[in-house]
Image 1 (cartoon, rainbow, N blue to C red):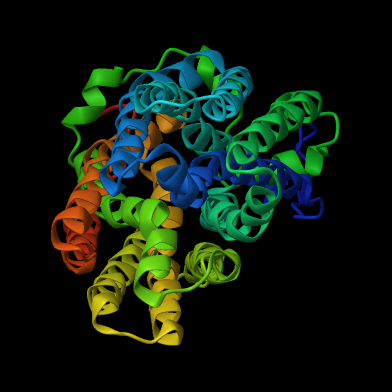
Image 2 (cartoon, rainbow, N blue to C red):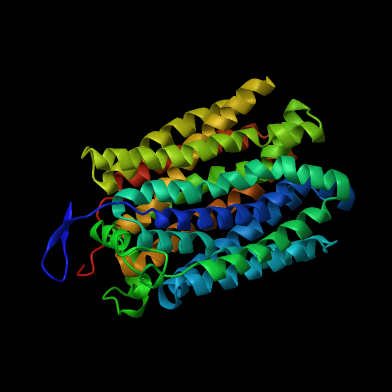
Length: 435
């Protein structure tokens, strides 16, 4: 690969210089904190139910309130990110959600919990659309799948790390300490992030050679936010591919929210493990999610590098295959009794589901024009979490009514499989500025 300099000389374009991958690590850490602040509810739930006389439905309602708010706030979040820049919006968001996490530990009544979870959802909404925006600015199209897989794995690192760490804290200091500590961690993180992060065109640590490589591969710079795009925000909903992403992500997040809110309770009630054992067993399935996210991104990069598929087709193909596999595995979960098989199926399911979410977020950078990546990613996430917000309360009602989670997982698996249909048959054409 070659580029021309201003003096018209031709020199080889090297990928030497990997500072862009440092940016991914920061996004990964921020995402882990984001998910610790969600997963702490599922870890604290058994003690909260005992201490405050709450029900499964109450816990599910907290998850639903969070998800609805998180979903609705995706829409203005994407617009704000594209308009005012990733760093500014992200910094405000982290401070906001960290404060709400801390305040959760001070609540005593269901109404107060619902209010704080409402505000938490608003604060956490910009996190992943911001990551998608930053990724499109820092990475060539062929690398976005892998880069996205790394930072999207944070949504699995959080729940994986949460059980052993937070159960230990809860055993020593009580469930309220979970919310106090995770809230403080977020504030500390954002202070360092603000000092570190710069736009690609303003970064003093990024070499000219690496910047040229990024631009050659289709990466933009965040200066795009200051340009007037030809596409209006509302017109994004006229595109078939955007609707396919909305529907496909809904199918994925439906089962994802059930896992996030009820996996620990499922293990406690069906496998009869102790609270101490929960710290280990509840974390294992999320390791499968981490692997699926990163390996899925790596696989799409290899398919593109070898010329087997375009970046868009590689991601759509992976999503389709993993959607079918996740459906088969999730539906089978209620029919096994042993702890080993249950953990194995949960791990496989999260591996496939995570490969879908990672590729879906990377797909936003391929489908959307550079000026609208934050908006398209946020719209997709809105679809996922607005519809998927029903799943925690539905699962809770099923568990309270039938005394079993079986129907929740069977129906959730079928819905997850529908993601394959949406991403393969509806998501096809990228959005062009002149559309």
